[in-house]
Amino acid sequence: MAQAKSSQSNPTKAGSTARNRGTSRGSATASSGSAAPPPVMPSVGGRGRRPTNPFTAILHFIHDVRSELRKVAWPTQRETVNLTIVVIALSVAMGLFLGGIDFIFQEMFRWLLGITGGSA
Image (cartoon, rainbow, N blue to C red; front, top):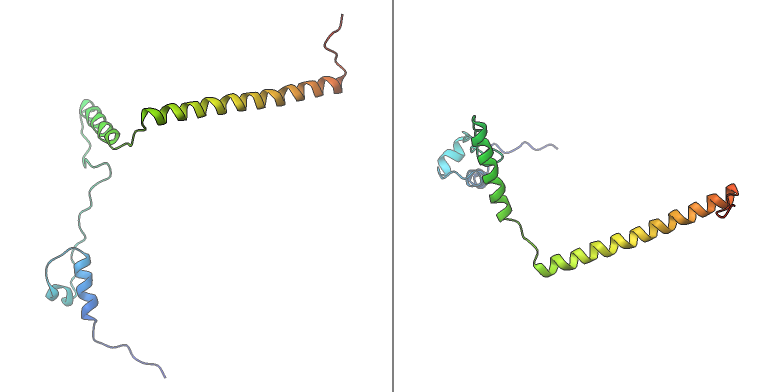
């Protein structure tokens, strides 16, 4: 047997949607069924309009870059030194490894082709 949906709306649900939208109009607006217009979202980049003057645009760009660089979590001097040592050590290790592989393949091809290194 199929049951019909209740014609009453859920007042708790209607009140929670009004609260979630950030409106403080009360339950009369929420229960009347009229939807509030969506809030205006700020544009990406935080400035809104683009300046028409290219020099102003460059100044805005520099200002934005500086404000973003202030938010960066910069490493300490000790962390920088340690990470630099790690990068140098790994670069040397990879260079030796690839150089060794290159030398092995070079000698293998010389042996396969019968080329000798000391011909007079």
